[in-house]
Length: 239
Image (cartoon, rainbow, N blue to C red; front, side):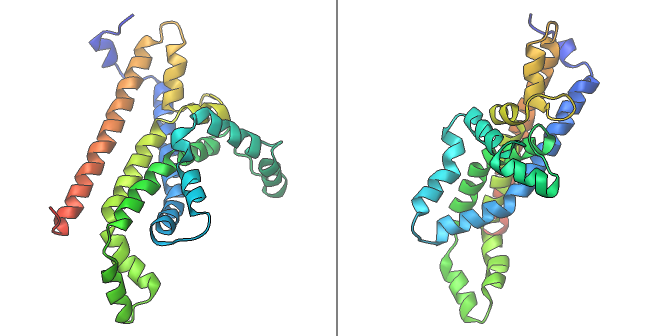
């Protein structure tokens, strides 16, 4: 049954609001957690040559080409309470991430990580290294050069990577449902709630509303990414 326009405009139910807020929290935390690692990996891949670089590059981009369910299954095997890493974390720190919202954030961050790294790497490769060398000859430390020259020049790529990763994390489904299941109030994010409603009798209207929200959020993130990149480039005097 196709939902009527007035049904799509009706207020969200508490369960739908819960799924939306959980998705936003998971996406935000996954991006915040992945950002420092993304910067480090992007810098290594863009500026360094070392044995095994091709393997690391392939591993970073692997989530883009393998089914998300495979990523979720690997996380479940490694990080469940019976897994080699998960059992150690639980016995040592009493921390368990499988079947929790923290695990959902981890799965979303891993799936979004390649997009973040790629955007930042391309932006870093476009930075003129002669500017960094000039600053170094004037006595600036490597850290100061990175923070005051490299980061500002690659800022459009950082912002684009962050926003694209956020949008990707919002839409993550396969790895999430495999690793943390579909638990209401704990791991049922927006895509999982949409899936549940689509499988429920008379849930078409709620599923349609969540689908519209998901499309609008993703479209808004892409528009924001393009606008911010253009704004930063304009401030730097780039076309």
